[in-house]
Amino acid sequence: MKILVSNDDGIFAPGLEAMVQVLQHFADVYVICPDQERSAVSHSITLRQPIKAMPLDIFPGTKGTWCINGTPVDCVKLGIEVLMKEPPDFVFSGINLGPNLGRDLYYSGTIAGASEAVLYGIPSAAVSLNAFSSQKVNFTKVSQLFYKVAEVLIQNKLPNTAFLNINLPYLSKEQCKGVKVIPLDMTVSRYRYVGLNDPHGHIYYWLKDLMPELDNLDSESDFQLLREGYITISPIEFRTHYKKKQEQIDRWFNKHTFQTFKGVQQL
Image (cartoon, rainbow, N blue to C red; front, side, top):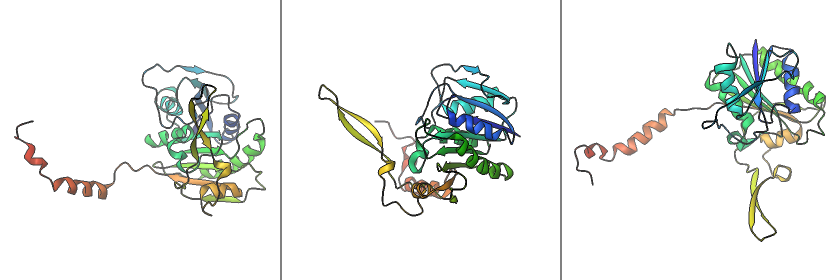
């Protein structure tokens, strides 16, 4: 079995190292990551500058490690199409520092790395940790919790039309309350702009993460369950075609006489 690992925190992120060490117990591991942090770049790819893939020897036992001057999606795409001789059997993205919940689906580079794999029909998972300071995180504890999750995923066949968004509480495996498989809560607005005055009186706007301040959350929200000490797993399937919606919109336009435009003198 071949596993490709990527992230958006960069090639030297401690969460990446923890993930690689765990996955080497199960398969041959390849690592392809950005050369620097690329958080919140969503599903962007590099179009107008060349990409350089630099081989590195920083993870003993891996089958190949590269860092590239691109996005997480670049990493997965380049790995599948070019750097690996054969496509991977599974793609893991993470372990991201800071959880990815709710609307983060549309912003996260970690999630985008996993979703890119699905476009190639490869099962994948994005893994994030409910902690924000790498200096304060004991990644040995994180690895023990992730090991249990990875073991289940690798032993079971994940559909290649969907990927999993996984959030780990920062708890030992003994303290963790269990696993909740739930949808993402899209009703929560986690990030808000706040205005700050510079010394010249101009206002600049920054995004503030309001997660510590969120209250009155739904009891089954991924935000709330992670806060309570559960591992949250959200299966994500991107549908690209909606037959009923196509037919409905087709009827809207069929009510108008667009077909009579043919042969009409242009204005």
